[in-house]
Length: 222
Image (cartoon, rainbow, N blue to C red; front, side, top):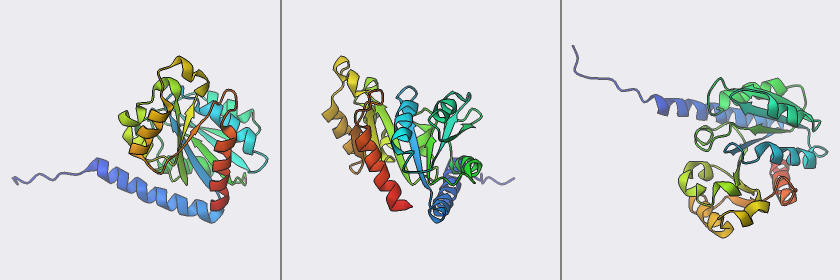
């Protein structure tokens, strides 16, 4: 009997395989002229409300398709469908994230709709979604004021992989111990290149700046 034990780094292999799929998906999207945005946050941060505002501001400019990812239910997809854009629900089967393969399945379902802006509302979680490259052109995340200004220190990977951070629910900032400048500093520690945009999805404050940034990224890609 051999004393040598073969060790297989499964997690590393999973990530490497996914990274290859993600790069292939981005190349395919570029060829087809489709911009994919991956939107992440913790549960209750306001992803769907922010997304509704975003779609409302941009649906006359782009052909938008939305993929709503969740462990179960189709509540969010129904809300987005009411805006008049194409929306599908992706059930993850208990998984707390989407990877590139799952994202491609969703995009395949949108094929034929002639979309040029696809938005993935990822599963509400600040850990798992940040670990998997979905093949998106840009990653965005929402941090809500009630969560606290220290979240970039507690969840460094999420903030390090995002191109833009939307700080939502700024209308309630006076009622919470939330320091906007400290939050900006904490985000910069993790990702000096991340753009930070304070918003209130409920009232629409800051949405114009956010959709202007997004439009610039989409136009450069397509």
